[in-house]
Amino acid sequence: MTATRKLAPPKAATHLDLTAILVVVACCACWGLGQVAVKVANSGISPVLQAGLRSVFSGSLLFLWARFRGIPLFEKDGTLWPGIVCGVLFAAEFLLLYVGIDKTAASRGIVFLYTAPFVVAFCAHFLIPGDRLDLPKFVGLAAAFLGVAIAMGESAATPGRPTLLGDLLCFAAAVLWGITTIVVRTTPLKAASAEKTLLYQLAVSGAILVPASLLMGEPGITDLRPAVVISFAYTFIAVAFISFTAWFWLVRNYPPTRLSAFTFLTPVMGVIAGNLLLGEAFTASLAASLLLIAAGIYLVNRTPAAKAGP
Image 1 (cartoon, rainbow, N blue to C red):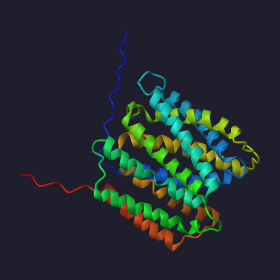
Image 2 (cartoon, rainbow, N blue to C red):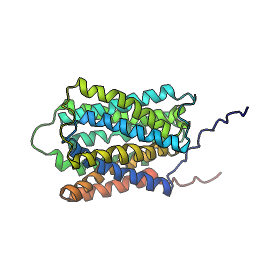
Image 3 (tube, one colour):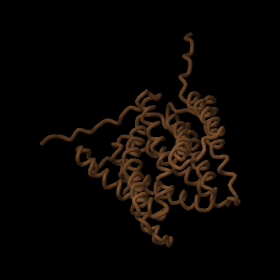
Image 4 (cartoon, rainbow, N blue to C red):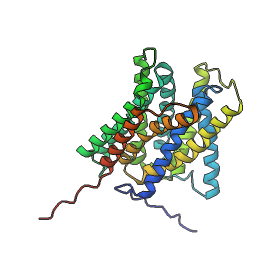
């Protein structure tokens, strides 16, 4: 009888190398385009139902991928309860986000959602060794957040007064996103494969969001024209399957605060995608936001100067 070899938890890097930077920027571009895809798909599939079906379909693809590669998914490794917690947080995040955006301006909702890195940075400062929130990191995160606020500022001035409830729901979604990242890094999930970590979230959220859509009385699927089908396919194949798998690999192996700084690129890339695909203008505000975000990324990822010896 051969003993089962227990894999040691991967040692997380203390900085982002070129591979990590390329992967996280690609993820941000994918998520930015995903916002356009969701907007198109929403015209034929109700938002919460769309999120639930996305989890179901991408979870099925992920399961087949893991089986094909021989990645163990059901061994006892202490990840069951943390995985369920992450799945519930994941489902609640998207439920709050979609309902919140329905009750406030979408641009305001996006700005509130991307306060999530502040939640990660604050929690990591106390819970993750070596990921301290020093002054340069704080200034960098603040600069990046200001860049997002500027990029979305013009859209926030649309007619109609956003509701406080919608703003609070979007902010709550951001808090849940940040907490999920911390749970992955501070529980046995940090030693699990990225595929298993993601499958927990997709399986649990799919089981929650689809019934939630029915309970909310959403109209469901109303139009399956080609644009809707293609856009929805992009959200569950490229976004929820490929990019989320890559993201959780990054979270397990690199400092979450530094990764979170790059997520500020997502709404900016979403605006760029809107410009290319929907004819939206590339404004001076967007250019200013890109400069601020670049400065924020530099500050968060800068290597501190070595201290002189005695």
